[in-house]
Amino acid sequence: MEDQKNRINSLAVFCASSDGLDTEIFKEAYAVGEFLAGKEIELIFGGSKLGLMGQVAKGVLENNGKVTGVIPDFLKTKEVVHTGLTNLITTEDMHGRKLKMHDLSDGFIALPGGFGTLEEFFEILTWAQLGLHQKPIGILNSNGYFDDLIEMMHNMVRKGLLKQENLDLVLVSETIEGLHEKMLYFKPMPVPKWLNKDQT
Image (cartoon, rainbow, N blue to C red; front, side, top):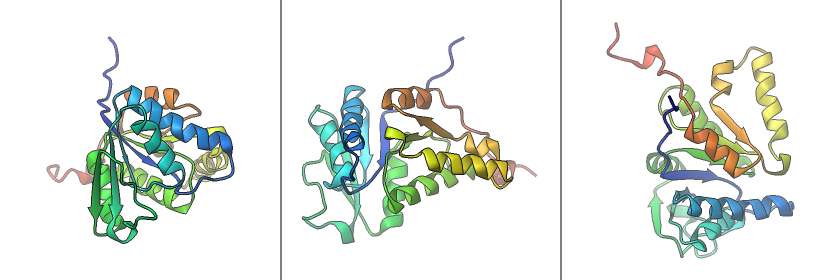
């Protein structure tokens, strides 16, 4: 019997609002958008026209895909906001942005980025660890960008500060095609018993 596939009609992408210095990573960001459009997966992202964020959105839009941007009000300036999206949602603050992106998405992908990208990735990962959602979470390890972070997470397990089952929540691939396949067949952990208020 074939494993049940997850429904993935939309994906939230966390990534840099700057171009960076690695041309391969820059090109990969556009290719991610192109792939999502080809699979008819709506992009949910931070709403910026800048950097890798802008490239992912461009890859979707130039290939007839749908893009929803979610941006906090204080960042909604003409220098930052992407005005050519399918849909643009404004939130009061950064926390509201993450909640809305969570609500709109069937899964989450981290592309290369800085502090903001890692903050978004680890918060949504922590929510999964706590059983607050059961959606797939992936790292696209473009050109080895996340090698050191992945090794650090394995070191957390070796040091006994992270459970292997929680590390297993993180799906990793060097290609968007491979990551998408893993997300389709991702099996979430059972909801922790202590979160089930119906149990005595």
